[in-house]
Length: 110
Length: 114
Image (cartoon, rainbow over all chains, first blue to last red; front, top):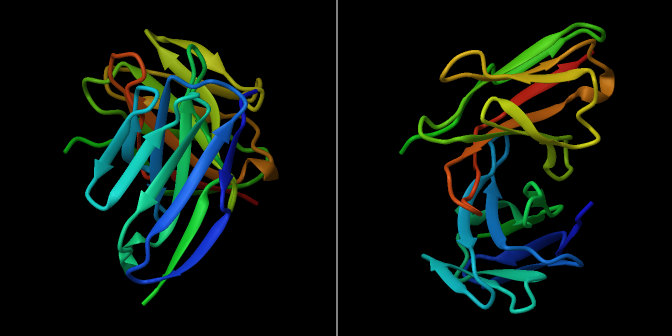
């Protein structure tokens, strides 16, 4: 099945720093999604990307859909303590269900 | 904002017992999903459901699993004869009509099989 490689696996950063994480795939996706999961809760949608090359922002978050349609990145600027959590990329192919990356665990040190 | 709701939040069951996990998707959504997340691992697809039938299922979704939409609002996942390795968070998700429309997830049911 389709696989997503998400990196880094975990990050420890100081409050105020910028964060970058990315996902790559050997398959082409039509939609890239970024979710955040807090402990004990379900994934919450952060950003949805629908077109190759698309760059979308949501507050301090910015994500891009790679032009090859095989990758995406998420940036978080000026991190704050509540950014702590696990960030998952997810991709949708033509007729395939949503596939998740393994997640990036973000820790923010105040 | 409308949300996907799941009950119970935590279910403990003995190995070999049957469990039913319940979900109420967002009301105008048409596509429904179950995903599973074993502790510390990624979220894995189990099954998708549309127009009152399964549209796709993964190899995890074997004969011990079944889904049902018994009425206009509920969407259930039944696990027959649970095994220890079924212990996980089970997430229900739904999405509206529209190619590539994003999934909205519930907060999950933590299933513990002892």
